[in-house]
Every structure is written in C-alpha cells, then in structure tokens.
Amino acid sequence: MHFIRLITFLIFINLNNVFPQGAQLKLDRAAVDSLIVPEQTDSLKVRSLVPSVQITNEMDLGDSTTSQFLALKNNIYIATMNGIVYCMNQEGKINWEYHTDGKINNSIIGSGDLVVVMTDAGDLFTVNANNGDLVQAIGIGEHVNSNILFTDIEYNDLKTKGIVFGTADGNVYCYELYSLEMVWENNLINADEISGIFLVKDKIIVQTSGDGYYCLDSETGVLIWNWKSKKKSDNKNLQRDVVSQGNSIFITDAEGNLYSIDLLLGTENWTKKRMYVTGKMFLINDELILHSSKNKILLVDPKNGMTKNEINLLDDFSNIVPTLVLEEGKKILIGFSNGYICELNEKKIIESILFTGFSPVKSLIKQNNSSYISVNRSGKLIEFNIN
Image (cartoon, rainbow, N blue to C red; front, side):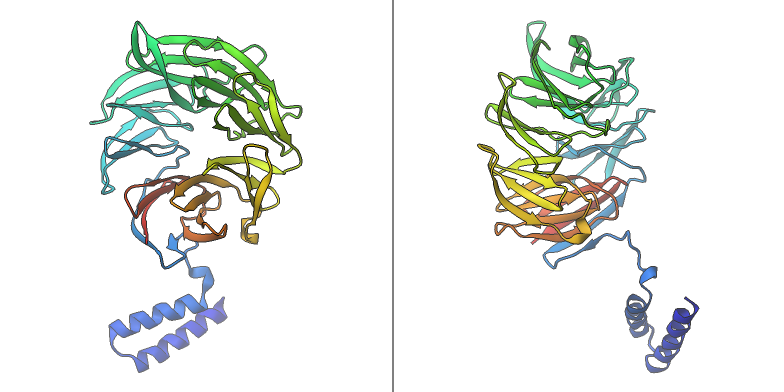
C-alpha cells in the first residue's frame, strides 16, 4: 500500500510539471486514480453499465426498505423498515412523511385518497394520500409476517374494498378499508406461520412457512381447499412466489419442484421435478420465468411445464436470485439481489445495464416512455432513462 501511494505521489509530481493548469490537472489526476488504486473506488457507487442507460437522479432515504413502490395520484409512496411512509412527486421531491413508530417489512397499498400500511407488530394504518395525515389506526394484537392486499367485497350492502393479511398465529383477516371494521376471519387449523397472501381472481391463496397453501373465498374467508408439499421448507422466513394463469396457479417446493395447481379444486394439473428452482417465479408474455439454483434463468411453458429456454447467468450471479421482473416491450428488466438490473432481450440474452449498489433491488417502475425509478433494500432511489 505504501508502494502504491509512493507511485501515485511521483506521478502527481510529474503531472504538476507537465500540466500547470488546474483544470487539466484535475482530469489527469482522476484518470490516474482510477487506474492505480482500485480499493479507493467506491464499490457502492451507482453506475450505468451500458451507453443506453443514463442516470438522471439519485436520492438516499437513509433507511432500509423491503416494500414495492406504490404509484397513486401521480405520486410514489414507499414504506421503510423503520416504519416511515414517504410520499414523493414525479420530480423526486418528498411531499410528506408519516411515522408509524413501528417496523414495516411488508407491502404498502393504496386506493383513492388512502394509503394503507401495517407494522410487523400488527398495527394497521390508513393515511391520507394527499397530506400524510392519519385517518385511522387499529391494533390487531398479533404479529404480521405476510404482505397485505386489497380484495373487492360487499359490506353493509355497499361495494367496497377489504384489506386482507395473515398472521404468525395462522389467522387470516379481512378489514373494510374505510371503517377498519373486521369483515371476516379464518383461524386456519394446524396452519404454520403465514408468510404470504395472494389474490387470484376471487380467491385468496394463503402461503404458510411450511410450504402449505390454503384457498379461501375472498368475500367470506371460507376455506375452499388446501394443498401441502411433501417436503417442508427448512427456511421459515422464505416466501415463495405464486403466479397464476387462467384457472391454474404455479408454485414451487423446497426440493426445487414446480407444480401447476387447479385453482378451483386444489388438485395437481402437472408436476415437474428436479428443476432446482429457488422459489423466484414470474409470468411474462405467457411464459413462466424461473430462477434455477444452477445459476440459470428458465423460460417454461405454463401449459405443460416444459422448459423452452435455459439462459446461463454470469459466474458473478452464482448464489444470487432475481427479486423482480418488469416487462418493457420486447425486452424484460430483471432486478437481482446483488443490486444489478439486467435486460433480457428478445434474443434471450441477458445483459447487465445498471448497478444500484450491493443491496437487493426491491422495486422498479416505469414513469414514462423512457424514464424509470428503482429502489434497493438500503433505501437508494435511482431515476434513469433507457434510450
């Protein structure tokens, strides 16, 4: 290290002799630094990896987040792990913030003039989307580990929305959006901790930490069927993706097998074993996009489970999983847990296009024809264009 500093100093002296003008010297010093001392380069610095991507704005929330963006009323809303809800306009300016005084590790949802969040401790909040004022708050009294979602319901002879979530005690609740009155509950017998809630048509698919799945009627909460994997997952905090097409849902298990389940009956349409999938799955352009533990992206036909394409990832992506997928015309943008955003083009080639820092990409939305905004787990927001 002393040797490197000595060389840098000698080069600096020579540059001073050759280029006495400060502007020219500044450029050359920057070039020397980038060539000589790699450990001085900021490894967390956001950077474009291809000429077609231009970074237009960056902002650091100073707080971690695990939630997706909520786009509502021409604003973007986000909840942080320290329980702060932010409202930002399209220019990236924070309009308001609301402090829940709790931890938020699940989703943020909204409808009309209301933003809805729930803390891990089970406190449910509705906040005015326009000014950040608290509208209502209630305590559930149970720890909540799942996401929250809306479902269309009829309550007191009015069509409205229900807020659905599951708890660590294996209970599922639905609360009416505007009154925060409980509409229904289902105390699932012998259920493990609930890790995920998914809305498929008029059905609620409940995922438990033991790789069990329950199907409930979204209007009443009545159990329709349940399905359990033969192999329970050892990772109780792992939420596997559930996607649907038509009357089928697609799920994976701890052994990396892929299943197609009939939405109405809860029976298996087909099973594909030894696919080594990690649980990350998306449906784009009538294709299932899955991640394999063999460092591949698999494109699978949802009709029969046949693999149509296998795309090898770079060695740097070993033990890295995709976190999100965004369809963009004939190309697909994929965020990864190592902070990279990649493009899967129509030729089925994956290319890294943006580095957001060594933190998982948690959300990515398109703002207009060429502008996007992303956020990683550490709370770094990046606005960029793709030309």
